Length: 178
Image (cartoon, rainbow, N blue to C red):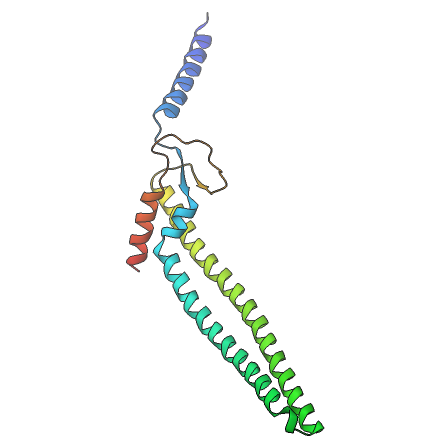
């Protein structure tokens, strides 16, 4: 064999062995987090849910107040109806219909506002989590962090690949320091 062929074979062997060495001893790996545990254990999500629940209680209180006003108007009408003139009955019925429309409109508006606020809250928290996961993954040289769901995106993983607890601790520590 010629010297050039030997050099080429040696170079190929060196590249192949270097690649195998890198693949075998590389610290880069694929890991996963349990997304439900991560989201439900993240203090930022818990705080956001509590704030949302407080708003929802206020909205529900307003709905309850309007519903009581409608019920009171109906009860008053039923009591006073025998003594009212036809015109007074018509005015009372119109007042009841107006209050019922206001209640229905308010309930619809609150339902839309609640859905919008819930979506915004969830989006903001997921952005925080994703930013943390990106930083966490980069700092540890992970190639991929997979989010496992209750529907089973991860069928099997070797011990040590679930980093949910580590991520959750770091995420909560970062949140507490804000």
